[in-house]
Image (cartoon, rainbow, N blue to C red; front, side, top):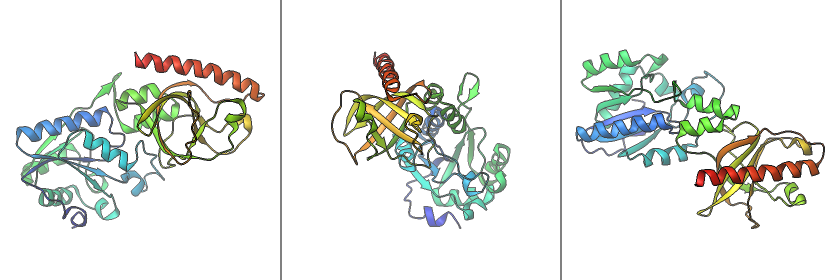
Length: 309
């Protein structure tokens, strides 16, 4: 029983209503589904459980080399717990689980987690070769004595909100649309690392962030941002890119925090990306770059003031 090694230690009081998936980003579609799961569980006096796969099935199954994720597993677990379900269970998606048919998977979940209700979105599938679509699961619910509930999708501008659409929006630099689908600001977290200190040479010190390469980054460019450090929030401007004016190699995330002079090497920063100001471009010299950054900062402050009103 492949699920047994992961779920046998879970102590369940009574029967449960359950949903499962990757839930990358925990966007407004996921939030709506979870609110419906909680409502259904309360109506039937059940415990509400979320199973989140810690690795993306497409990566494990070789459908693509790597799916760049929106959130780390740790952030995803935190965001899921904040939705108010009784239990959030991280579950590795491995080859053993991938080989289970929909009926085998459901059978094990029923036994191990006392599942009485399964709540899923309209396009969710379970089991080997994606064999457990909504029609199959409805048939299994009759055969295996559980209730199957499908939740309609959440749409923005007639398009279904999804993790893949958020990734596409980020890659295009459409941070407004990505944030709208997330229901919050997209964020980048990581420790501050030493770099060349080029910003200090013209009075604009920056903190360079060691970001997680398994996560998706927005398109190269300059963004208005909010930076969280030691429980405080600061207005800032963030550059994502390759700094072509300095002819350096490698992609970086660097943030200039307004009216801030402290040394913060090795400190953890969380940067909320609010709005894209412009694309990254090469300037003929550092004087012209400085002039443009000064204009960028004015625009960033206007954007931050607008969202604060």
